[in-house]
View 1 (cartoon, rainbow over the protein chains, first blue to last red):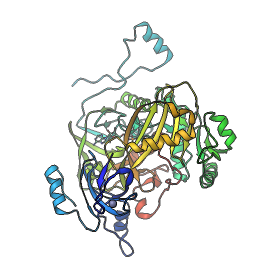
View 2 (cartoon, rainbow over the protein chains, first blue to last red; view 1 turned 90 degrees about the horizontal axis):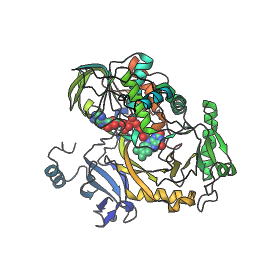
View 3 (cartoon, helix red, strand yellow; view 1 turned 45 degrees about the vertical axis):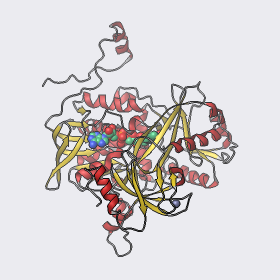
View 4 (tube, rainbow over the protein chains, first blue to last red; view 1 turned 180 degrees about the vertical axis):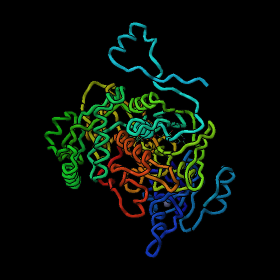
Length: 107
Length: 422
Ligand SMILES: Cc1cc2nc3c(=O)[nH]c(=O)nc-3n(C[C@H](O)[C@H](O)[C@H](O)COP(=O)(O)OP(=O)(O)OC[C@H]3O[C@@H](n4cnc5c(N)ncnc54)[C@H](O)[C@@H]3O)c2cc1C
Ligand SMILES: [Zn+2]
C-alpha cells in the first residue's frame, strides 16, 4: 500500500486515507487563452513512466492538499511537499537526480 | 536468411482426426517468428488485440500485407491477455454504439473468419439498476440503443432473478430495481482472440516480431520514416501506435502529447466451482462485476487506481471493495477462495472514449484510449484503424474519435454510461 507523509499535519497516511488529484504544477489557463493552451491545461498530461509530480489530498485526515514526487514505474516515493509552490523544491529535485541519473529533470 | 514456414493448414475436425492418427506430430507453429526486414509498408507497434486486428484488416480489407507487428514482450501479454473479456455494445453515444456494435457483430463470426476458435459466448449481459438515478440512465440507454439498432431491453427484478438465481435482489443497501439487458452480449477467450489474429496475419505473410521494444521514432520533414528498436532500425512508410497504457511514451518519441493517463486496473478469479451463473452481471453502483469462465472460476473485475501507475499491479484495498460489493450482490460467493489476482495498465482519456486518429506527425497514426473497456472493441477498432491507415483519412467508424476533439470540445462522453471499469 502506498504511504505518503502529509506535509501539512505530519501524519504518515495510507493510500486509503488520501485522494489522488492528478498531475501537479499545471499552469492554469482560462478566458482569454488560446484553444491550444486551454486544451493542454485541461487534457494533455505528461503521464511519464518514471518520476511524476502529483497532487494528493489528505481527505480522511487534515483535509489539506499537498504534492508528492513518486515513481510511476516502481511506486517509490521520493518525497512530499506543500502545495503552495510553482515547482518542486530544489533539494527534492537534487535527491531524485542522485537516485535517477537518467531523469531529464522537472520541465 | 531462410524463409520462415508460415501457417498453411486449416483447423477442422478432419485435420484433428488426421493428426490424431499421426500422434499429433504434424501440427505447425501457429505463426512464424522471423527477423525484421529492413522496411515495411506498414509497421504496427503493439501486438495486443487492437494492433493485431489492425494488421489483419489491413490485409483482408485493403490488400496491404507488407506489414510488421512489433511487440516488446509477447503477443497478447498486455491488457488483451489480462482482461475479464466482457463484450457488449450498449453504449449511449452514437459513435460509440456504432463501433462497439460493429465489433460485437464481427465477434459473432470471428471464429469462422479466422479459422480459430475464439470461444465467443453471447450468453447475455445484465447491468443492474440499483438506484433510481441509474434506472433512468439505463432507460435512456435502452432508448438510444433502439435508435442505434443495438438490441437491448430493460428487464424487471423478477426477470433478473430468473436469469441469475444466485443474485440477492433485495440487497442490504441497494435492492435491484431492474437491469439493462443485452441478450447478445457475453464473453470470448481473450488469448485466443490475439492468437487467432496473429495466426491469420502470419498466414498472409505479415511479420510478427516479439521481444522487440520500440525505443524511438524517426521522421523527416514532419513525416514518419521508421522506428528504432532493440532489434535495430526498421523503416516504414506508415506507422501505427497501438500500445494502450504505453501510448504516452510512444507519443513522446514521436514528439506530441496525448490526453491520456495510465492507471492500473485489476481483476481476480476464484477457485473453480460448478456452473452457477450463465450470464455476465455488472453492478455499477456497488462497483463490481462477475461472470463464470468455462473452467468454473468466477471472473471478477475490480476498480482502477486513481493515480498514474505503470506497475501492472493494483492497490490491495480495491480487491476488498470489489469483493464486498459482490458478496452483497451474490451472498453464496462469500466462502469462495480467490485464486489469482493481476493488473493491467489502462489508458484513460478525458471523455472515456478511445482515439483512432491521425497525429501531428505525418503518416503516423494512433489507436489508444480504450481504457478499461477495449477488449469488446477489438474487431471493430482494428477494422476502423486499418481503414484509416490504408486511406490516410478516417472512415465513418473512426471519424469522431480523432485526437483534436478535446480542443474542439466534441467529447464522446461515456464516463456516465460506464460507471464501472470493465
Ligand atoms: C483487469 C482488466 C480488465 C478488463 N476487462 C475488460 C472487459 O471485461 N471487457 C473489455 O472490453 N475490456 C476490458 N479491459 C480493457 C481491455 O483489456 C483493453 O482495452 C484492451 O485489451 C486493449 O488492447 P490493446 O491491444 O490496445 O492493448 P494491449 O493488449 O495492452 O497491447 C499493447 C501492446 O503494446 C506493447 N507495447 C507497449 N509499449 C511498446 C513498445 N515501446 N514497443 C513495442 N511494444 C510495446 C505491449 O507490450 C502490449 O502487448 C480490461 C483491462 C484490464 C487491465
Ligand atoms: Zn494531513
